[in-house]
Structures are given as structure tokens and as C-alpha cells.
Amino acid sequence: MSSRRNFLKTSAIAGAAVSASGAGLFAAAGNETIKVGLIGCGGRGTGAVRDILEAESRINGKNPKVEIVAVGDVFKNKAENAVKAFKSDSPKSNYAKYVSQIKVTPETTFDGLDAYQKVLSTGVDLVILATPPGFRPLHLEAAIKANKNIFCEKPVCVDATGARKCYELVEESKKKNLAIVAGTQRRHQKGYIETVKKLQGGAIGDIVAARCAWNGSGIWFHDRAKGVSDAQYQLNNWYHFLWLCGDHIVEQHVHNLDVINWIMNDHPVKAIGMGGRANRKVGDPNEVGNIWDHYAVEYEYKNGMKMYSYCRHIPGENDVSESVVGSKGKCRVSSYIINGEQAGEDDINAYVQEHIDLLNSIRASKPLNELQNVTDSTFTAILGRNASYACRTLKWEDALKANEDTMPKGLTLESALKVTGAPTPGSWKLPPAVG
Image 1 (tube, rainbow, N blue to C red):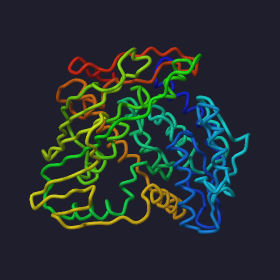
Image 2: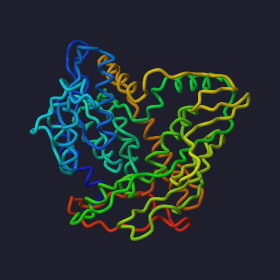
Image 3: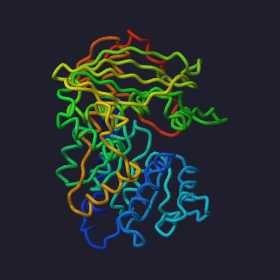
């Protein structure tokens, strides 16, 4: 495969081959069971399975109409361990109350880089996409071509090539009337919804400034096992390699950026930033990865409003929050406080609520489709990342046109993948525009 475009083209052919296996919005308003497949059996994927089963229990009580029928992961042991966990009726199991809804068999437990294609071919109605973000455009395209409803984790891409593909898929998924709910769960969280509604209604006047942050201590790291290929090692350590996670500003801080975009009902038009790698493991980037551990970015929206964004993977004082200042006051959005008064409160766990909203939208034949919003927020993070790498002002349209494609060519599980070091601040340059 000569490029990611060919990689995606191959997936499109595979997706077309399974497109007859299930309709996007079937007649689910009655007693139809929604069959779910999981693609990506890590912590977030298995958590999403629990969340969708709990969501269904809140919708249909003791008569659930959601079944988990297939799972797939690049690693066989992860797929098999996920099925074991789902089928455990131990009182300590997170899935014990849902065991009757687990219909996965050895024949519908898949592994390998093509596991996603195999899950899509099993007749599922809805897929959960929870693999490393570098694969998200590929898997979204295949699922949409196969007419599947989707729950996809954020972010939805890691570079400009992936973002352009996701924007194309927005239109295709809407034409097919497919439901796509993203893992930006704050948009389904009651306190956030109430607070943002008041802000958009003028509670503090015009928004004149914003700040958001995800400053935390760090993330897991797995040592290389003997005999493991570069591809296997990097896939197992996906958070530490740019082609897989897009850096932590994209993988994690996207949540906070999404909240500000939501309030503004728009995305920034340009950004400038700075950052670096100061506290992560030192050594060969093939072993320690190549992502940064701190960012500070100034974004600007069309109306001139500035957002100040911070994220960090360094031990210290934690801060996961969003705040806005208006012409008539201020709001600590993440605390639901407007001008010193409580503006909202939570009820159902937002990770469960997003699945309630997804299932209800499918059954009502009024599909939620969040792909545009989550692509906007993902690319907001990519814009800030690249502006920080370059230490230069970067415009949205220029960043989006860039021939930036980080997917390894001809990827197999045995691939030898040589990793360049973490980008040097100020030396990195935006690739030229496509075409």
C-alpha cells in the first residue's frame, strides 16, 4: 500500500462487500433486538460495552433488546479476555447482570488488523469503535459503507488526511440516515447541557474569552516483551506514538476543547502555541515514543474571541476544567457555576446517558449524528498541536489542506516501524497542501 489513501480505499472495498449484512436504521421501534459488535477490546471498548448494556437496562428494564454478538481486536488475547469478562457471572464482575445478553461465540471472536471487517460481516446493527484513534477514519468508513449505526470513541483522527476523510463521511452517513454518537460524553451530561443552554441564551452576555485545561500526571506505559515486533509494541503502547494517538492534546484534551466549541457553536480559525517533551522517558524513540507532555495554545474564533488551552502529563496540581468570561459575567462551566450561582446538576452517568440517547434515537428513526462536531473538535486539537510544534500562527484552512499523513505504509503486525523523535519546537514544518 503506497499511502493511507490506498489503505482507506482497500477498506472501502471491504466495507462494500459487507454492506448487505445490515441496514442502518432498521425497524427497531417494536421488538427488534439491536445486535452490537465491539471493535477494540481495551479498557474504553469494554467499558463502552458495559455502558450500552446499562443504558438498555434503564430503557427496557428486565426485557432488554440489546445483545453483544461479536468482538474484534488486533490482539487475540485481548479479544478472548474481553469475552471471558463479558460472560463472567461472578458477583465481582462488572457484567454479571448482563450475561444473558452476551451472545459472542468463538466463531464471532476475531483478531488481527482485519478484525474490524470480520465484526462488520456478522450482521451487527451497531458497532462500537474503540481502537487507537489512528485507525478511526478507516473503521468509520468501513462501518458507514456497511450501513451500521456507530458509537465511536474520540478523537476521530490524528492528522489532516484523516480529518478530511471524516468530513467526507459526515455527508455520507447523513445520506444513509445512520446514527453516530461520539465519546464526547459531556454533550450528554445533564449539568453541562443545562449550563451551556443558559450560556447560549445570553446568561453572561457575549462570550469574550475562554479557558480550558486537562492538566494531569501522566499515562500508562508497557515495557517491550521479548520477540515483539515494532508494530505490536507500538500498538500495545499506542498512547505514546503520534501515528496512533495524535498526542495527548488530541487524545485527551479534545474533551475540553469540544466544550468550548459547543458553547461557541463553532470552531477556531487559527492558533499559536508552544510546548515540548520534558518529563517522559528519555531514550530511543522506537522504545519510549515520540509524543510531548505539555502544551499551551491560544486559539482565536471568527469573532475574535480568544480561548486559552493548557494540557499536561507532568506530576503536579491537576486541573480538568472549562471556563468562559462574558460581557455580563463569568462561568465555571465544568462546575456549572454562572455568576456565582449553580446553573445545572447531574443525574445519570454521562457514559451511560450517551448510549441511552443513541439507542433511543435509533428506535425513534431520528438518528443522532455527532460526526461533524467531534471532527471539528478533533481538528481543533490537531490545529493546536501543529501550531505548537511549529511555534507559529497556523490557520484552520491551511492546516486542513496539508498533506499530513502519519499512517505507516503497508502495515502488518510484523512491520518494522522506525520512529522519528518527538517534534522539536520551532523546527517542525506543516506539510505542503494536497495537490
